[in-house]
Image (cartoon, rainbow, N blue to C red; front, side, top):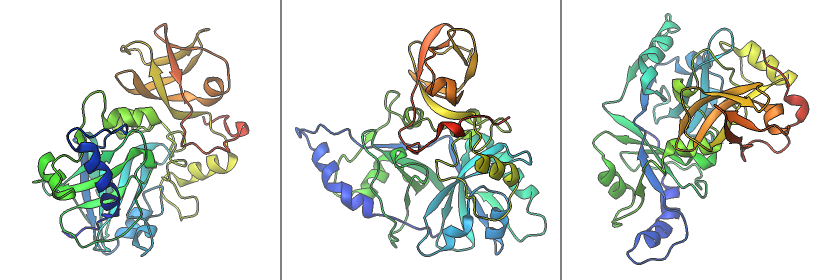
Length: 343
C-alpha cells in the first residue's frame, strides 16, 4: 500500500541529533525519543464513498484531507447520538484518495470496526485492520515541539506526520511491521549509529501526554462518559463547526455556540501514588472531578474548570495533595464566562 510521506523534519533534525549522540558530545538538549505505540492500531477504510461515509460519523472535516494543500492527518472523534465520545482517532490520508487509515485504541479495535460497519449500510466501503502491515510509532522531544511542514515524498516504507492535535506531542510514524526499533532508526537516519533514545518509564509517551493533559483511548476517554469539548476536541483541532451534519453534531454545536462548558481534561501532578480512589476533592470535601489516567506522579483528569483554575481551593485525592496545571496549549483568550456548565 502506498502512503504519503514527510521527511523534511528528518533532514532538519539530523545534524542536531547526530551531534547529540556522538560519544563525548556535550549536549544540554533533551534527546529525541522513538517509541512504538503498542496500545494503538490502524484500521483501513476504503471505498468510492469513503469521504461522505466518514463525514457523517466524525467531528472533523474529512474532505480537507483530499485537498492538495490539506493536512496529512487530522484528529477527530466518533460520538453517540447523545453527543458523547465513543472513540478518538487520528485519520491519515494515503496516496489513494479512496483510502484512509484510522488510528484507534487497540483495546477497542473490534468495537470500533463494528461501529463503522453498522453505519456502512449499502455504501461500497471496506473496513479492515492493517496491524499485520503497519504499526504506529511516535518521535518526540519533551523540551520542544516538532518542526514539520507538509511535504510529500516518494521514499518508500514510512508515513511521517506531525501530531495533528498539538505540536508538543511529537511526530507520528506509521512503519511496516518488519521494522523494529534498530531497523527503523537506520531507515530514518542513514549512516548515524544512535539517533534517538528508547522510551523508559520516566520518559514515555504516556507521561508526555499526561504532562499536557491529553486523554487518549477508551480507558482515559470512557465511551459515553464525556462530551468532545470536555475532552478539548475544540482546542486539539479535532472538531469542525463549519461542516455538515454528523452523529452527535447538534449538541456539540449548541454547546460551542453557547460557550457553556464546566469541565475539561487537564494535566495533574500528584504528591503520592494514586490508589483505587480517583475522585478529586477540595479540602472542604467538594467533588471537583476524577482522574482518568495516571503514571508516575502525573495524570490526566476531567475536572471542573472554575473552582480548580480560578479558585483558591487546595485539591486532594484520598487526603493527599495534588495539583492541576492550565495546559500551555489552551487558547490564551479563554474567557471565564465560557467556563460554566455542560449537563
